[in-house]
Image (cartoon, rainbow, N blue to C red; front, top):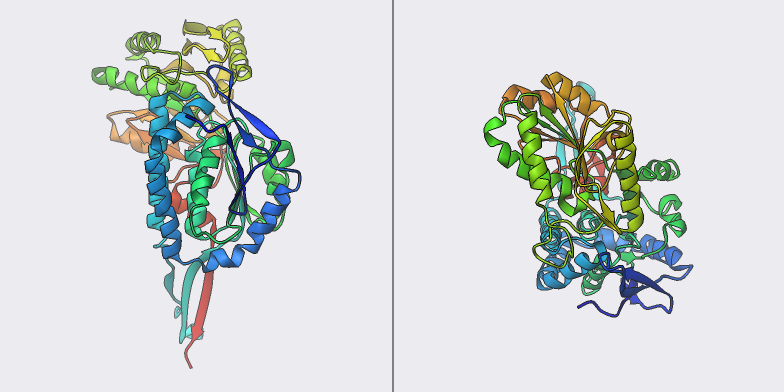
Length: 476
């Protein structure tokens, strides 16, 4: 069961408020619980507290940071069912997938606990010429200082984890603004962090309206902004001043199915269906564009349509449900409009396309024009488009004909094609023999082009939240 209300967190302390934010059950549309809304000056207090905690967090020893992260791992494990249920309610995510996201939350904090005690430097040989004889160089990584995080609705636990856990490991105080539509996971994480010995001011978690979050972007006391969300991230970067900025801004992920996959089409279809429709397609690396070689196109289409039609949609609290609601009715209406636009432009609807409230049917189309929104933009919903290709070079060019470049998938038995995809695809990651939706939480994750800058994955985020400091010693 959910609590009747949840506090927000300011400088490590739970704060109640008379002003409440309703958190809706995304399937029923009813109020599930409420969270305290920060008052007008809470953000300034949070930034000031993070700034004041800079030195205490820097002096907080690696083994102490590790102990905090290990405490979180233990408590998340104890509260696994509660976290999964809260996620299912606030995001409309099917309960099986919610349990999976809690598992990833635990794994991400476990990885961070391990990385917190191996943030090392190096010894540099400076004696490369006579003028530097007798000089020795050493580097170490030091915390960047206070950082700010803005996270979206679709992974309310794991996308928070990928910012919070590396910050603790690196020794950076932080201020987090979770999505107002899905704040519960972040606030439960805050409740568990408040049980630890983190220095005062080390964290604040404020479910504030995005219109009031500008200081997270512009305040010079904050040394890094990490934002996951839409293309507005580029505007945030332009206003961020001198601070470092990391952005993960989504994509319209493509998956190539090569002509040599005829003997494993059933397995390929299972992965494509998962990649396209898991979490109602509300993932930055959801399969949106499926490119199939002409030799296997008709067979793949037939199997794919049959499998998509068999997906069970409905109440996400039921274990048998695969497809739950989109985040709200407006999101479903938008995507329904994109489907209609593609059909008017000549696309063929293979299955799905219907909508009831926030529930949009799993939808497949083919012959979608290259300039249609479903090809050019991020659908962020349960829709995929299917198209054929004749040569692998043509497939590479089609994938690259996009403003986005987060991850792509390639099903092939040809090592040369796999290597060419790795060389030539304009993507942050290339997943061979699986869908682009694959992610493990210690791997570098991020995109190119409009998909963003920087990389998540705990060790890579720690690098962004720290800086190299050099010491040179001259022999007497």
